[in-house]
Length: 300
Ligand SMILES: C[S@@+](CC[C@H](N)C(=O)[O-])C[C@H]1O[C@@H](n2cnc3c(N)ncnc32)[C@H](O)[C@@H]1O
Image (tube, rainbow, N blue to C red; front, side):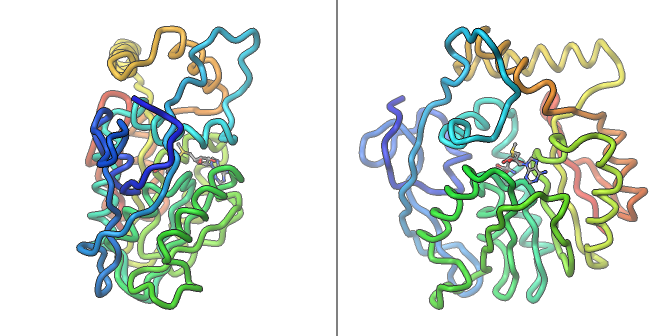
């Protein structure tokens, strides 16, 4: 795969496209068009945005000292490639986020994408959310937020752009723990809760539940652990096999694991389901699991 080129790509398909799918200009990259909102729903009119696609080689060389994983500029640069090759089922998670937006996102309400990174979930929501719905994309990584702002501006769908006909995206550089959640028809936490200290997660989810409207939903995707050590070992092995099959070496897998183990603390699926129930969501339904990654839909 060639890397480091600016190519016109589909912002949503960027995260979904097969690794080796050639782009139309011959670069090995990603699919090409972005669907623009038409009459409130983004389905038909293709527009192009420019995006820099780089291959994740961050842990390929031996490191003397492996620091804690940060969502810094280096990571933001390679993030689409990193997440697609590291998270089995990521494309399916994004696809359900879009479907949930179709079902739950309502006019004159807020949708929150908490820990939005480069906006994969944000755009999945926006493409399916109705006119009059405000999509708030929140992240505390300056590197991620700067890139997302650029993409959103290219897409002409900020509140400042009069000709946007679909849901508007507002990008916030902020800590999700300090973000006010109100009048929410849908809250997306796609692979983000796992980065908060475990002892802050109950109160954080409680606060989100308070801001979700009756009939609204939260969609939570996480890396999970398993109470049974044999299951935990099996799923970890299969996850590492997945990464190997997507081109990561044993060294890359080992160094990334060391970097991230203090930052990403997984919990069991039962813990997530219980927490959401206790926060006041009446229907809590795990809908997806691929190895040690799972996604839960909870409706208030
Ligand atoms: C794995 S990425 C999320 C991927 C993204 N949701 C997607 O669907 O592609 C986790 C993101 O959460 C953000 N994050 C972690 N802790 C945060 C916090 N306390 N406040 C805001 N953002 C946070 C990180 O900066 C990072 O961009």
